[in-house]
Image (cartoon, rainbow, N blue to C red):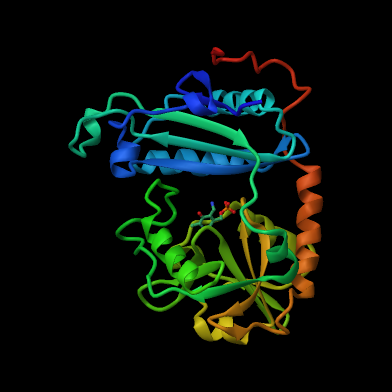
Length: 304
Ligand code: PMP
């Protein structure tokens, strides 16, 4: 079955799912997006993802045109049509069609795209053996320029760092801010564990406040593991007993090498394993149900 994609009120097969070249999401990266996991037929932390997406849209003065409960129904509909039990929802809201100038006022209606599909960002080997990362020369966008808290369609800063990782034969890159403090990887937050304390950079260094990051902090606190949102520099990465990254797509992925230096034992550590097991438990227990829910959910999109 071809993937059915929601675009502006209707569903289209994968090959027919297209948007205009006049769309400012395409021309200027003017828009926001969100990536959300579905586990066992439930959408994980949907409210938090919607809040972040609507906050991102609000900051750039983009009215999605849908209330959050309508957006929820569309996402549920999208998952059902694509028979997603374990998968991933990508929501993209762009400024919509305008002219060749960048003025968003010329764009009368946003474009709303929802894709529900399977996802596999990293190889099974990366989860088992851990991954190599580098510290990129590309610094993180300054919050006073393009705030990383906005989950915008402008990912070139991150892509430049990912290119460096690719060229260095590493799987990911961690970016420093202009003061040299660790921020995050190109699409994950980063954690270090040392001397019994789990630490991750605070929001103000310039990161996307990851939903998975938040869940891992919650779990650690529930398990009585000391946590700190603290300024980290490269020293902390090199001396860590363990390091791992978190993200919706990646979930939790151990880091075993930074810039060619071994982290801890050079193997995925026990803390990462323990937190991952608790993370898996949470994904099994929580979430907005996609199936067997009452029809609040009368489909608001027409099929094609
Ligand atoms: N940082 C960046 C830059 C990201 O793109 C992502 C993925 N959305 C994350 C962190 C992790 O956030 P989350 O756990 O909400 O997916």
